[in-house]
Image (cartoon, rainbow, N blue to C red; front, side, top):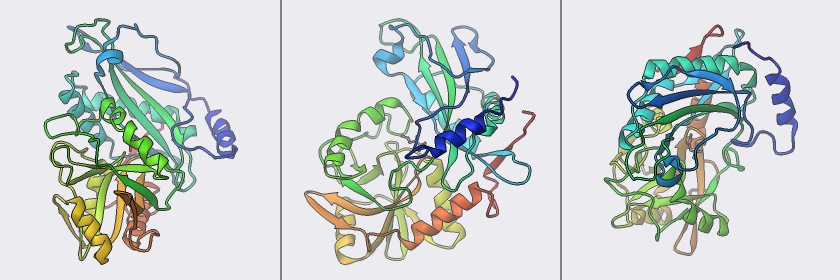
Length: 359
Ligand code: COI
């Protein structure tokens, strides 16, 4: 398909609007589509103009939520003006792990990587270059079989759409307030908490509303059995700087294996910072805040990158984290990750995958 260079003009117009790009509001000109038919499996990818999908109202995705998604980012920099994807294979592998959990037939990783690269090459003019911006890529699979029996669908559609984005939170890199949810839970071990599937996010909306009423941007989830151990924060994994070490909840099946989480752990280890994946009780967090042992907390995610936590709302009390500002380690991690993604710092782990223009 011919590359249409009017993307950059449209992008400039969107960036000039009040509020700028925001997150996930605008979409590029094309999308990728692959269909899976019973018997023949996944068909070759097609890149088509961005537009509505026509689906049968009985399609299983509408009734039983058989669907998975991913989120990854592309950047553009350097004199060659080439696009770069951040750890695309890790995202595609996680997509397949989510598919496995949700009984969706796996996608061929090389085919998806090649097709996403072709889509990003085509949409290259839509990639914003200002600090804090990126092209957010949203792959997803939906169950399309029109049948109301509860069983895995026999047909699926895989779609990839792209959105030029700014910061996920209105606060940008400024500290967010987090509401600790003690009534509802997001997931339980053995459930689908470690799959990136729509229901996990729908299940969080009720608590998100309560958080918003209290002026908080996100919800901190506790474990589904004892409501005692910290799991994750809204759309992010969570880290605490406690004394001499950084701790983050372990991947026990109920939380998402964040690609950014993994990148942050590696960066911390590169710097010689002790980082431990271990269970952490909310009581320990609160005690750490009161005693001053807990000096920083931050969330990590593809959309949010590194997001400092300024305060926790716990059982009617608002507790400030550290000074309430952006902690020194959160800032250093954000700068390091954003620096690698924007080509300003060496990519020692080989995380950036260059997208060839002729893709
Ligand atoms: C991401 O960080 O890419 C996510 O998928 C979180 C999303 C809910 C915005």
